[in-house]
Image (cartoon, rainbow, N blue to C red; front, side, top):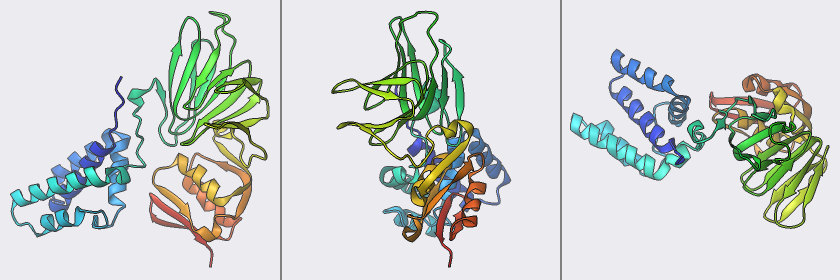
Length: 321
């Protein structure tokens, strides 16, 4: 199946709706149509919020090329001119800035993977051999159970795999393939995470064999490794429980605030950041992922910070004066 990338198309649709409502905000029928479009798919609502958050009054002038189209639109007194400006603005945004606008959108549709989870969602799936596959936020995986192997391809995000003995065809290896490596699991449980520049694996029970260029590498219970083009590197003194997400938790141990917010940001849409002068503050604790806004409100109770909301989708932590 050919992978789809709805980002630019959905962003373009959101821009169309925003400009239509800006010109005809009193039209109740048009408002209802827009509402139906927004609720038709989660990406529609996300694109709407992303475009809306650029400026309270749709101030897109910061985007190169958009100011000319907006000026044409706003100064136009004829419907034809407005339509021409709308096309110009949409074209400029899609060609020049759709990636910037849509960078928070899931670029792999659930339709392109056998199993997928949305941002903030976690899924548990029982595989044909009895193994338990759990997907973390914004993750996608393909399943290929064949006569000679049981293969899971991690396309995006993070999974936890609890291995089961293959009663239907004993001897078939249970494998997880990522961009950097092929991992073979035995009786036990392990977490695999696909980052932009590496694969991370953590084993909580049993053992995992790493099949990659170079000698065979074993990962045993309690160990974590980083895998990249240079090979496998053992990770010491982890600042986060790598499997706590399966229980809906983030468990930290003397973790940098900047790194903590990067983790929390995986479970919510929009921007989440902090000022440079507080990024190195440390925190330890157990935090629930079910409501990340409530989670963020806990931080000022233990750290000298304040949480500032520019919009619901644009949050920044700053030092408490």
